[in-house]
Length: 77
Image 1: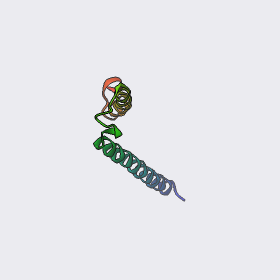
Image 2: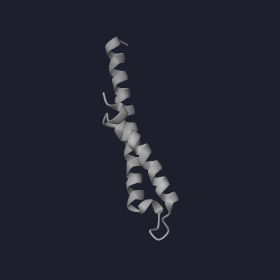
Image 3: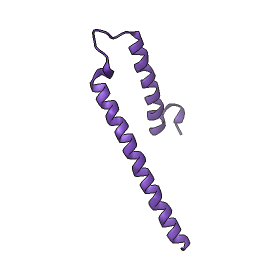
Image 4: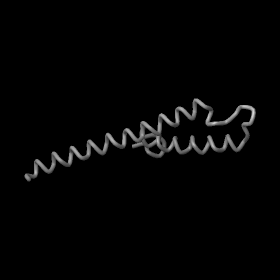
């Protein structure tokens, strides 16, 4: 196998892995969107500060992801 053939196989493998990871992220985002639409399984009559803390934790984790993805905050170039 030539160097060019190995490079092409390597690129093909990278594209395949990228598509697989993208599908994984898309599935997680869809699940989060559905959970959000259901108010994160919280009943308005029963919401408490613990529920707020849980959402704050989720928001902080998502902020880390969006900051990295959009090169914001500590990820600014």
